[in-house]
Length: 133
Image (cartoon, rainbow, N blue to C red; front, top):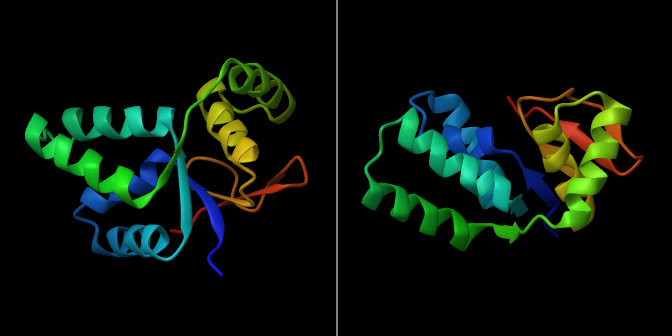
């Protein structure tokens, strides 16, 4: 049975990286897991590919289609935003990081793959933060 996981933007971005090791790890995560992302992660993904990697719009559309055909998308709600404020206060994460954490909790994932948070930390006794790199 595949793990139900949530992935942060940086995991998706490394698929386009020249760093072969991180690219391989990212591809392995996405291909071998039951992956979820939020609408926020998808928006950040497109923004970074455009700004940092200078991808043209047709290439962005292709990347967007590949990602959305591979992972499940959770759309943030007003409740998600409200809960993210509480997570930010409790765990001292930024609002946007807390929004990703909250989305993962709402989807009932047990693991959040990210490079940005405290690897090994468990949020609300339910969600483990994992830095796969």
